[in-house]
Length: 224
Image 1 (cartoon, rainbow, N blue to C red):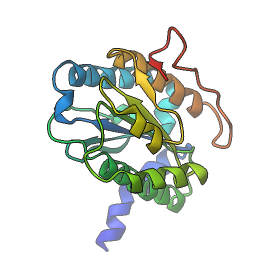
Image 2 (image 1 turned 135 degrees about the vertical axis):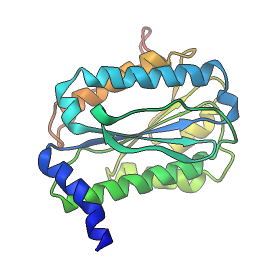
Image 3 (image 1 turned 90 degrees about the vertical axis):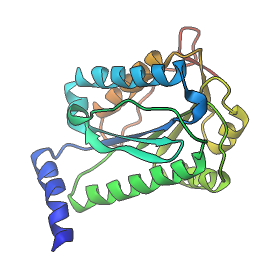
């Protein structure tokens, strides 16, 4: 009986808003090396991210956000619609258990997709968007294999962004897509790009291919 009751809020939510869902997990490195200006700019960028999405009426109906931090791995926010998404201040501490964080993100996505299916809700290909300034301090090759399988099966789209001294060589082995290096600490520009990208997707149909703005142009926030 308790399991049934736990599903009721979700069923009501989807009944009130049957729009297709566009789920995105922010996978954020909060290890000790992010202390100071990096974690400050990351927190500011997340606030800008919400502000940008709040101005898009379709994004409000379709985009769901979650945050997983790693250093250690922690679910900062489970999937929420943009209007109720309330990111709190992240703090930097600990190591960089990137592999475990990726596995946690994939597990969360699989659980969410099953919930969509149970409630008859269509959904866009989910995004996992990882930002890190270091190298993994745990086993990462199993996570890399899961990313490859997920991309091949179109289960999700995985992006990786390196900050400061991120190990871009390992990131290139983790991700099917080429990782992007953040210019300086331009988190604000990164999150404006991310909000615009997700907004464009939310205005399409789940089966559509949406062209994204290249963030590595001379005026963009990243380099490859």
